[in-house]
Image (tube, rainbow, N blue to C red; front, side):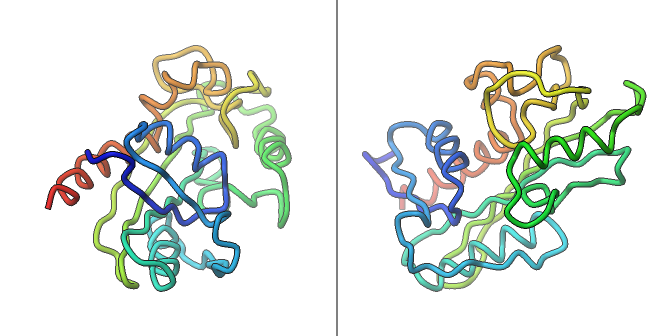
Length: 201
């Protein structure tokens, strides 16, 4: 990959930007909407992760040149009928914090037996240019919910999610290990392969 290839991420979530920057490595400079305050807020009116990722990528690509990458991701809990799902970032209400969202999920799961605490993180990435989506990628990691917050690493629901095959939450596992198996990491790996082919032309 060429030196310091630029990639614009349609988000104002610096945690997400930093995580994607880390996953893609030093050959890429990931910029985001915090650097361009005049960009509009894209309303997430879709009913699926893919629909929302497309909306964000297409919306920002109308204002900036080049490829725009957007991510929509969240936690799906079987015992909650798939919630919080596409509402993961605002589950506890407008302007809520990660901690408030996490505590609400734990409250709703109070008393649910360990074998009924199955959940997954899902991520869909969309790439757009000039208002049109040209590729999408998705990743999923299965796991179980804890009964309390464990660990201070990661962000979002990481401290209550134990990935399949492990005994510690994403909030406790080293970031390198988390990134290697996370939903976002799996989707990004597909994107990386596609992007490297695209940028060779």
